[in-house]
Image 1: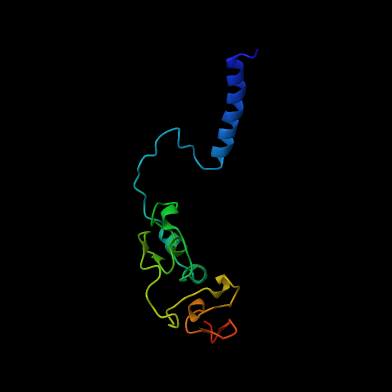
Image 2: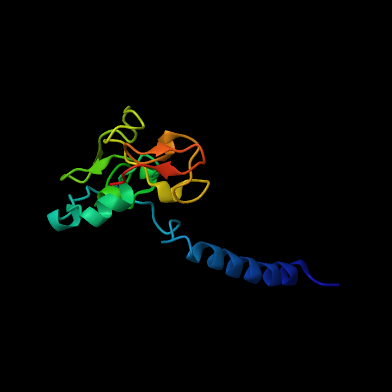
Length: 147
């Protein structure tokens, strides 16, 4: 008959190893000490500069970003790609503005990344899936002058 301590010892080692493997990919071990609240310093000015390439990658109505998961904390940012939709990163490191302001789909102020459309790049069901003043053709393609 196998003793309970032998079973427990042989079971605990694999469980401990499994726990170590599962938590190693999840970042720092939060079981060691409770997190202490610290004041985060504003990001460096160089980190906040928005390049035109960054603007072209992130500032769209159909750009979705969960600001609650930002590394510096909820709504904190180092660049505008860490802010949802049309929101931008302020010089103080906070997301600001409205993610999807109320403007017409055919307004020049309406920025939509047609490459991300569900039907494929430049495919559409309505003008709201086309950038700016472009419209959706009857054959389902965005048409008109692009930016």
